[in-house]
Length: 172
Image (cartoon, rainbow, N blue to C red):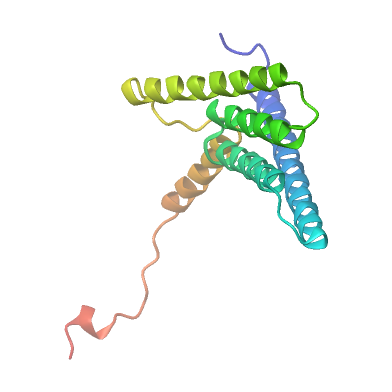
């Protein structure tokens, strides 16, 4: 079902949406880079690298990967938020191991196991029933802009050089 808005208003809406999307993606990326910088500062001032610091860095890396995937393909695979959730559970367990009740640690571990199994099921499904890689949203918008520029370049008449090279004219 198509939009009831005119094509002009639809294009204006989509351009506005893509600009807001780009600003938010840049904000997420800059915030993540700032958090990574703070974590490095913490590690250098403490002069110690803990397992929780490494797990937090993996969470930041996954967030940056999600931004990259969204910019490149216009969508985020479900696996990435699952990876972040598994890392967050592992970090939570590692941080509070002494304070957490034993049964709560078992429940958290079970939650991480369920998420890992879900990831395996998703990967198994993609292996046997792959979907076509498509670009949508932000990525598709810029693809359409690049295609428009290429079409205008192709439509322009080719200008040949007035001077021929020696090889073209057959002279040696």
